[in-house]
Amino acid sequence: MPLTTAPDTLPTSTSAAILNLLLPHHRTTDQAPASAEAFPHQLRQIGDFVRAGDPLTFTLPGFPCKSPNPAKVLGRLPDMGERLSLTFLHTLCREIERVYPPGAHLVVCSDGHVFGDLIGVPDEHIDAYADELRALIRDMGLDRLSVFDLRDVLGDLPHDTKRTHINDRYAPTTDALRAEIRTDDHALALYRGITRFLVEDTADYPGTRSALQRECRRRAYGVIQRSRAWGDLIADHHPRSVRLSIHPQPIGAPKFGIRLLDAPDAWTTPWHSAALHRTDGTWTLMPRTKAAQLGRLIHRNGRPSHFSSGHTGMSAGVTSRPYRSAC
Image (cartoon, rainbow, N blue to C red):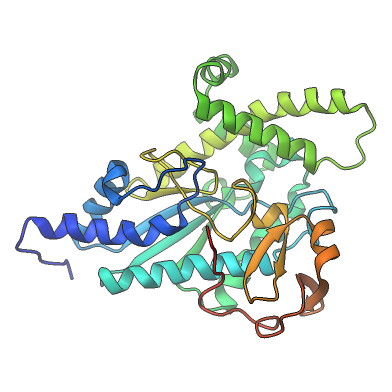
């Protein structure tokens, strides 16, 4: 039933209360803290749901597949990093219910197929990763979450055909993207961040380091083009949704960057790293090779799950609060 509100101020105050639940997890490179009033795009979008009394819908592009570099990750399938992140997102939706009874639902927009050919991951590995995400959400009872990917849009068409379709329909031209990167600091930071990830994710490259960097700079344009295309496709299919991002976003940007887990780098994600359970009970993300130096490998259901540096209280499961961060 729609939420009835007499005072004109109630939607505004409720929208701010919802946004205040997101702010502690804002993923940004900006240093100064910000209040809800600094995010007019999100306040307007949330306010549209509140005025209608409808459950909020968040969309989060990400969770594409594991990095192909075995020095960074434990394998091809979701592990504790994804478990913790999904639990965090579900808990956030549940917390919103306390200030807004209709609650919230978050759609994980798994984007691996969008640029699998550019990041060197076979499509069958991407299918297996997304299928496991769905299984985790079901088996862990995370009923405020769902997964959306290209199969929901274009069915069983060949993956290359799907990529060509969204690229032709939605992606900006390379020339337009180059011009934007030359003049926009945020676009330049994104381009450099993706280039760095592509370099780091490449294992056993036969050429020189400089040749690899040139190749990754070229592919970075394609990744950004298709990421933009995916974002526009999501907007078509979820036009009212509040758009979240796993990339750092400036204060006040149309997309709200959200930090899934504690990590020393604002760009680190569960699919580019391994989870380490520290002695104080907190979790963090880092490359597998580094985590292996700090803790012992823990298996779950016969598969590598995470590393533990000695604390055992949470090694076998996940609580409703996946991490404590000093950030």
